Structure formats: structure tokens, C-alpha cells
Length: 477
Figure (tube, rainbow, N blue to C red):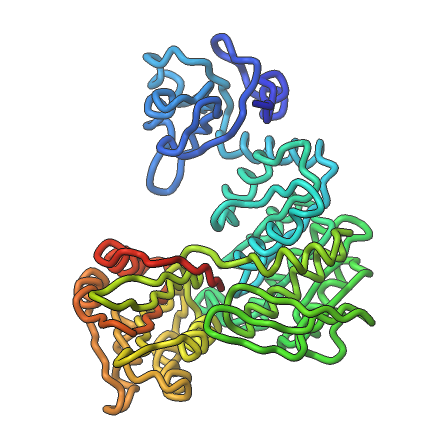
């Protein structure tokens, strides 16, 4: 197997001190002792809740070739005789390695941020760019102060494309991350009232997302959603950051990359992708107009990255979704089936509305119902009561008559729904999971969505554990 880093280059990049006989090099990098693979370097990062140094022995038992540890923790690791690289601060060492990976790379780098659709767009780019060359992209949602440098450090020198997701929930968080990534193309999917409790306005959220433009390389391109109300602010921010190549996407007739003639169905959609004077028929294996708009952003970025556009459009048809962001399962129940749509990873008012629309289009059969299983949207601050109650409107407009809720903030939605809607409310996620597992019937379409902190993945797991899958259809958001 090819080495990701030689030990000599690794020591130099992190400004570390080798201790013991280091291997020739490493084939991977891990910060989680449970997922270490043979040949990995284990970086013993100290987080908010756990300290990786406490799990260094487990990492070695799982096959780590060496461990990167802090000088201050070395005395406590005296019994571990494995090869080590000693540094002052392990997270900073990972950042240094990420910067070194970026410096040695000739890849075209794309960075994605936005209030909604970051991970889906990132995964689309992984799919669309693959026919044109080796793609390195973040796993899961590795988009924060450790996820971004870890993804950079893992980027092989052979990659033709690098795709990075950059997130934030406070002002100033994107700026240092994008300056590590140094993208050629920066994409903002959309601006919505996510993390509103940490900002004074949606405009302030937009300005925080616009920090992504500050890391663009000279001559780089910005790609912005022209359907969004904050487009003008974002365009001005890009120009203020010195960006001269600014492109747009969406349904707006003036957008450089447009979605037209959208036709959606329960498992996917077809639309016309307009790129300047060129028009292409495109299909995506995931439902919803919002998915088509993400696809247009990804296709536009692929063209800006000099990828083969025809092959990218062909690859789009194979794109499904992402776990927790609309992944769809067909599960057996008795002699029938029901559909489970897993949106359990995250939620804000915009993504809730989009997911409700997807549920409204989902197929039911027999006596089946469309059931919205919803949990709290976190980080809404003083707006929390209102934004939860306001979900009643989209649910009623979509014709959803069965709503199952959990979480303290969802009391406000429960109280806002009329008697014509069958509502089940449980204070705890675990109680709602138990109820859901015994209340579904053949023909149902069940959509599960909440912020990650509510743990609604437990509801998805309860249904998957009890009911065997007939088939999985990926359908992401």
C-alpha cells in the first residue's frame, strides 16, 4: 500500500520529536482509537469531553504504527513503548500537517459552506468529479476545527480534486479553516436561520458564511445561490474579499447555472441543467427541488473545476444520499412494507420545510399514512418558541395529518397544531422511539428529523432493528 506520509516528512511537518524507532511511514491518520486501522498514525487530541492520550494503548492494540502525543502527557505514557512523535500540542500538530498537505498538493480544491445542504453538495461533488480524476473528500461532516485539518492531512498527493466542507455556528470560525484549505472554488449553498441563537440576524449569518471567500486563491471562483435573499450581500462580500470571478446558481433567470423544467417524484427528479448557452437533461436519485438546486451547484462547480461535464451529469444519476440526511429505506412489516426517510442528523427551519415537502411527495399504500417524526431545532435562541410553532403551517399545507414529536421545544408545535392533526408527543427521544416501533403500519411513509443533539438516530435505529430492509434507496438532503 502506498504511504500517505513518510515518517521523516511527518516529523518535519508537525515540528515533532521522534521517540523510538519509527516505521518507514504511515498509510492513514486517525483521531479515534476505535477506528484505527493497521498502518495509521494516531493523533491523541484532547477534546472537550475526552483526551485521546487516555486511549493511546487501545490505538496501538488496534494496529496504529505510531502515536502523536503531547510533551506534557509523555510521563503518563511511559509504559507504552511504541513509536511516538512528541509535540507541544497535538491539535496544532494536526493543523500543521494539514497545511503541509495543502502545500504539497496540485489538486483543484473546492470548499463548501452554507446553512443547508453542505454535506449533500460535498457528496455530490465526490460523485460528479470521480469520472475526471481521483477525488479526496471529507468523510461524514468533518467540517470543524479538527475535521478540516484532519481531512487535509489525509489528502493523498495523487488527488486531482479535494472537496472540503466548512461549517460554523459562531462568527469567525470559517476564516481560519478556509485559510488552511486555500480553495480554488468556494460554494455557498444557501443562507437560512440556522444557529440563530448565536447571531443577531440572518444577515449576520450570511457575513459569517462569506468568510469563505477570504481564503480563495488569487483567480479563484465564488459560486453563490442567486435565489437566496442574501445573494447581494454575499456577492458584495466576495468582491470586498478581492474575488473577481463570481458565479451564481439557482432558478433565477440571471443565474450562470440554472435548474429548469423540474420534474420530481418520490425517489428522485429530472430537470434541465442550463450552463450559459448549453442545456442538459439531468437526473438525480433523490427527491426534492432543493436536491436539484444542490445538484446544479455541484455541476456548476464541476465545470469551473474543468471536470468533464457530460460525465459528471451521467454520474449524478447514481447519486443517492447521505445517512441522516434523507437516506431512504424500504422496511418489511408483516406482509407489507413501509418507507423510512432518515433526516435525523440536523435541522433548522429551512431544512425542516424541505423535508416536509419530501414527505408530502412520498408514496404511501393501502391504509398507510405520511408521518412526520420531528424533534427540536437547537440553537434558535430567543426565536425558538416561534420557529417551532411556525412549522404548523408547512405541515398543514403539505397535508400531513400525523405528527409525532419529542423534545421540550416541540411542545410549541404540538400546541399550534389543530385537532384535525393526530399528534403524539413524548418528552424523551427514547420514549418516542419505543412508540414509533410499535405504531407504524404497512404502507406508511415515516420521515424522522431533528437536530443532532436530540438523538433521533435512536428512532431510526429502533425501526431498522425491528423491521428488516427490503431494499435501500438513497435519497439525501
